[in-house]
Image (cartoon, rainbow, N blue to C red; front, side, top):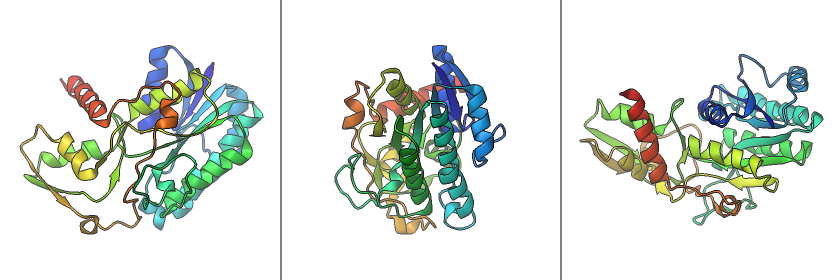
Length: 283
């Protein structure tokens, strides 16, 4: 097997390439400096030369609030047109494709868990573009995995865990939203799952993957900072107005992922392992 990873220097892409290296998997990692995925001809040429058997498409425009206005075109160019180019190039060389999507394809009004085949209804521009990217993959090819995830944190890049730990260093009290519920996802768990799908030759299609159990942002923050001397106060989301509408309740069902034989740790277990990892590296 030979893998090609787009967005290889991003939060997930870096975690994934690290995992592939650990396993001795032959791979090529590319980022926007190496290849502009919005250039269809360049993508086709690069894939034709590289000849991967699987493409992990981690590249994405992820500035959710900017996507509402100043970044709206870039959001569409990368997440839709870029994804279409990647899918077409993968199909041309008969490579399978793993496309990373998001819980933002749902509107967040379902108080139960979202199933993989539930109706989508994105409420912000980022979600609309990622859903259009899903549809582009489905229209272009059949040998694909679409993996929706949520609340991603990890060692590489900016995320909620780092933000909370940084704020705790300079603030005696933090206010955190407690009326939005979802599932945190450690990049290591996500990287292990998408390689599991490929290695086990799981059935193609749509999957949901986050760490198990669910929480509010407030509960997530409390767990992150449980060993810190700091007061954390729950507030509703009206206290933090944002350009892009966030789903209030985007807990996605994990049963299809579990049915592949993949064991999913809880978000609490994943967070503990992650914190141990970064603390060990800082010593």
